[in-house]
Image (cartoon, rainbow, N blue to C red; front, side, top):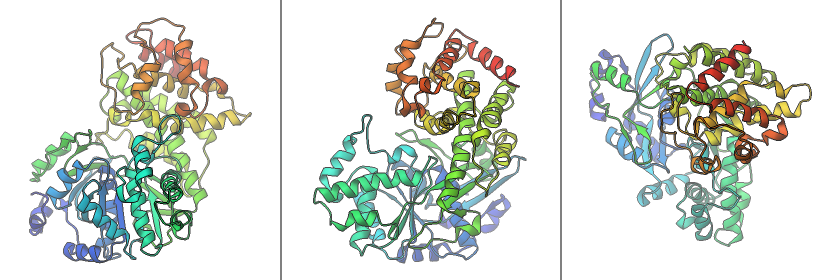
Length: 538
């Protein structure tokens, strides 16, 4: 069995292998999508294939929609070439349940897959954006995909070039998205929802800020019609809903590959692109998933509420997002990522069998996070964190790694920990100096940046856009070095861009320095400090 349209004809073979096939007519879906597309998605990675694409598949299976999704990739075009085009835009989705159950299904909801860096593909996207039928363009491009500035506030070289060149010559990701929006404006200022589904705070605002910058800049330079800037800022025409997404989607796992091959599915060869993206014809992900979206769709939307998506007002989405990203999941993930790398773990689930690490995430989640969490009403924070700690993270069938979660940590810390620290800092009734777990994780992250584990062995730091800068700022610190470290650490710990606020102003700078001094003392120091802190806070 391989992922080709022609190989899906013999349904009995797939069903015997326990692999569910789509129940809709795929040719009809593709024809309908070409004629009247409703949904374009940017970001062809594993989270898209395991979540939004599966949602649309469910709607198609139930006969609730007739069109599929057109996916476009603007960062790593190799994803399209390696796993979409060779597989006729099909994906095998493997759901890993905490009880050991496994569900396998062929996802066929993608009608077309395009690369933004190919002229003919981009021309197709221009045509799609001119279609009256288009309702939404969604995004899973990671938080850094929306960044068009550099440290200090100026435009990045790519964004600056696009700003001067105009929409017809845009090359950067956000420049090209803005150019596509301009096509929609020229087609009659048609309405559209631009929906970020990325795992970052107020994601819709980040997307708006980037698109608005180009709209204003091009207008000021006379490169676009004067009405374009107003169009982007008119919520009745273009909306930028906030959303909260939650589904753990690890890299393709060797164990899952072997299991599929034993079942007779041979299209399993994975690869790593030049941009370090791990891809395979299959995706593996956990069963638990949440998607909460602000219900602001000026052109209408698919009935995603019928397949589990929660729609709410902006305030509620904000509360749900803060609950998850700032308290109940993401900070705990980062804590496990940092300590997992330092302690030599390669699976999140195995870390949860480590009593010290389990106590650490319980300390950060229950004792330090829940006192400042806001209950969104539609989801219970306590129930959510219970599920994370008791079922999701310990799931032994989920091959997620601390190394994957540790990627881009410098961009995650201001939200995953900074918002909680701000809440403590602003509330005089809360004792910020009583925090232990959070400053320990921040110190451990600095220790992690030295790329030496707790045994004294070198390891490879996960990709992070700020790593080189931070490495230089840490000034060549070495394991076993004696403090004081204030002179070296002050420039980092006082940086609000990294931590969300100045840790010294918040009263945690010195405590974090102290933890760092303990963690760097020598081999075994990380375990010793972890055991001491979690032991005294049991």
